[in-house]
Image 1: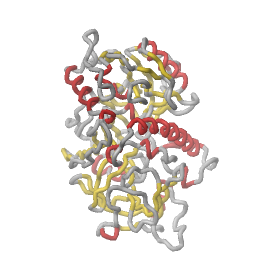
Image 2: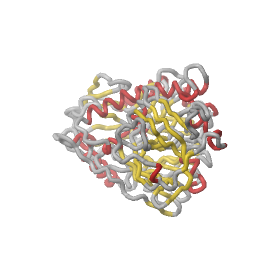
Image 3: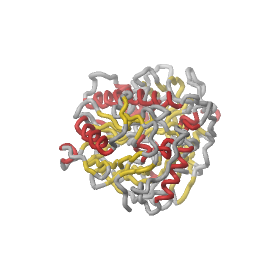
Image 4: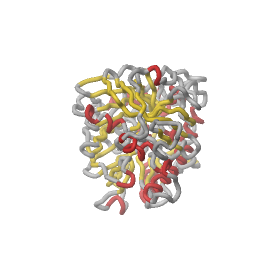
Amino acid sequence: MEISKSLHFPLSLLLLLLLPLLSIGVDARSSSFNLGNGDNHEKGLLQLFQNFPWKEHGEAVVNCIFQKPKITKGITTLEMKQRDYCSGKITDWEKIFQNRIILDAINVNSLFSHFKSAIFPGQTHQLSDSQIPISSGARLQTLNYIVTVGIGGQNSTLIVDTGSDLTWVQCLPCRLCYNQQEPLFNPSNSSSFLSLPCNSPTCVALQPTAGSSGLCSNKNSTSCDYQIDYGDGSYSRGELGFEKLTLGKTEIDNFIFGCGRNNKGLFGGASGLMGLARSELSLVSQTSSLFGSVFSYCLPTTGVGSSGSLTLGGADFSNFKNISPISYTRMIQNPQMSNFYFLNLTGISIGGVNLNVPRLSSNEGVLSLLDSGTVITRLSPSIYKAFKAEFEKQFSGYRTTPGFSILNTCFNLTGYEEVNIPTVKFIFEGNAEMIVDVEGVFYFVKSDASQICLAFASLGYEDQTMIIGNYQQKNQRVIYNSKESKVGFAGEPCSF
């Protein structure tokens, strides 16, 4: 397989949804993608951008009914959707996209605050705050993807997060619950629910992960309580219990989850959250006997009606629709932040030109967090400076425009009929490659194309951990194999 150095095509293929006056196709002077059949790829892009949400006029009502899970050769695949389409009618997509960038900046600041509390415990956070993998309510607005599972025989739509341990849903009786689209889960109606006693060995073992402030701390309760407090005042509090988890036709008995009796926050109508982090409480660990501690996802694009997938298990990848081979890099162990997925980034190329940065040129590489809850990829200042300079060198001749929030490399592309977008590639230890999909290169701030920004941002300091965000992971098959401590990447047009 060969990837060309740039994408050269009329801007209207990229912005057909935005600019009715533009039309798009591939310029004959440059092949955009040579993937064996470039025409198919180009048509896929055309279809994608024709369905972009900004093309909808007025209130777009989108069908949020999930398809049935697929089960083949011990692998269970759930349909994954953008949660925007399942949060009710939306009249101002531009405002949503702008707010998401602002909230993403808050999320990353809180994430680094959590990292600091893990490395230097007791300085800034209480135990219940520092022992949970997310520490900002803003993160709840940057977690963009949802799936549907069965909890106690009842369908529950959950926000997916690779940085969270506990899977939880809102439960009756509920002292305080936010509005959700599905009925609240009532454990009293389930014959398979069993509350976890606070003095049990299991509760004792799970106390740190669940964020409990003390065993049997409530004299009036004998349940194993959990509490997750977020930095903006949002929270989920309740009890841990055993319940039957259903993934398609696969049933997992005695799955430990959080039954939230007191919840407040920006959950967008979802019933709760699915934790896919690396702790023993996460869904990945609890289902390891079935799925071998392997899961993968293909994050859907922003197109109306687009779908992706969350796959549990990984003995056979023949059903994946990847258009490039899977390449693996090892997970980096971090004792202070063992819940997260870290990798070593060893190189970045733009349009086939490798960035010449000392940090990337070293044998060790640069520690980077692979995160489904951060939107925009964050690069250290020296790497971002080189990234920006090389991109602007190759993407020259276009009008620049002021930045927006964390995005400071922006362009005014109104009036252009075609643009030449350099291909961005991340290289990880072991020569694993992640080629950023064309939709992950630019972020659309204005729907009239007057402000389109490079979808990468700089960290504040060199010693901060770099982050690979979900915006750059779209149309990628990302495979997490905790058993063999490795992560794989392959290009894949996400669908279900």
